Image (cartoon, rainbow, N blue to C red; front, side):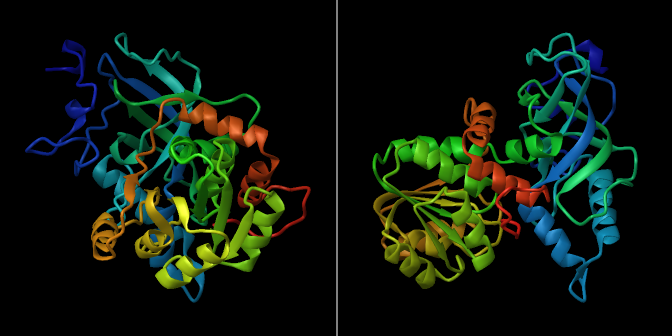
Length: 362
């Protein structure tokens, strides 16, 4: 049966090559044929944004004498995409997202997109059929944003957002890569009015947006946790947190003590760091009756659940799944409304900033 003979499954099951059948994200291989099913959209890819945990793992794997071997990173990413028909790091299980231009729209597509629309896909590369046509020749392998020529497919249940006209492409991509974090942070913070919100990894992309969202949602106190004094200086300059503390989030006692000294424990703890081992500290830093949101793909959810049980911690733990209705527009508006957020993103992307504060937020 050919793609034009019937409507594809909205979740993309018609692109799964595994047997027995699984969802596209869990699949080992996806069908990347260029021909559209009636409810699909094909996007001409301009740039990929690898998930932070995925890029960190790839870079660490190919670091020699303190230097990242960009060619080796590029070769591994190409091999993953060629083998799997999607970008899904086999170690971290995570992918990222992309920007591009709509190239063709199936007659039954529900998205309302038109040929020529520039969009960011708001679903993971781990379930997006993807073909790279240029060998990633324009990418040096030194950061998570990947210039790319190729195409990708969106299913009926995939989501995408048109790129805002007032933001550079790389900046829009960086914001939309993490847009689920601030939207869910705002929702959870509103459930704890006037509470203390702690953001672990507060100087990073999702962390800075989450601090801005918590403040807008009525948090009584915001605490940003960062691993270094360089990031602390950048976050203080951004003005997004009432208190900025330096602590190793992998050290449960150190994180708890730092948060309590800064005015905690937290009613809401948001974990945005892209390194493993932060579950115990988040539990200890959160008050009974509080909520922890884990956004990092480096999180061990078994460690979080069993750790909370072992500590008799009465906390609700949420998985940040990356989707909240209206999340892309909300994140972009936070960037516009909070100069400190824009400054941290500009620093991360290597742009000139007025503050003169050096360093890149993690």
